[in-house]
Image (cartoon, rainbow, N blue to C red; front, side, top):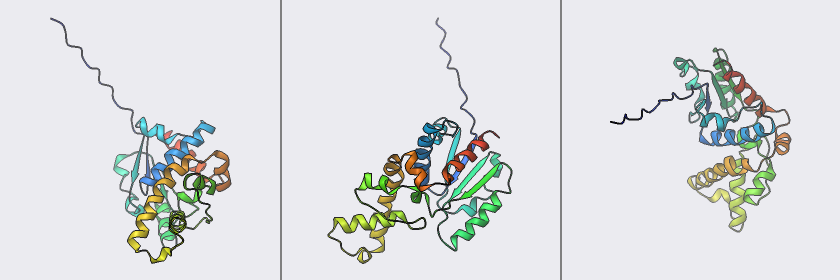
Length: 215
């Protein structure tokens, strides 16, 4: 009688870091931009690969960072929290949350210097996807600027403000999706350096890499 082949159970790799962000769009942006930067500098972590290898877990928290200040503490894992700066008074509330998280062991929280992750995109990357040339600052809502310009240029320049709020939100959300996917994929290291001359995104990745080493 032939013996049944025993399946060898292989334990999954342990999770080494939790990355807490506001939503799924942030995950799309960070995985793509980290792959770009890792290709240029292998010392930087590739978050997409880490997630695939189950070394990293993203937690999209739907824009309420203050509620997650200590919620993950029982897991006893390194945590990296990234929140959009947004605008006052939200900015000040999030700054207080960042300070509280940074008091915890093996936890680091950061606030973007720009309004949101879309503000780190270069206009040429957006143009490559949508065929429109945008002008926006560090604290503009890029998705809204893009949605309005695309709508007005494709409908004979009607008034964006005459649309219902629901319609504007729907169009903006559609734009937000491809900004964080296809537009990020059009970015290069040199384009990112133009939009992020201080290397802010690199500093986030370096911090995640340092936290991984403490696991």
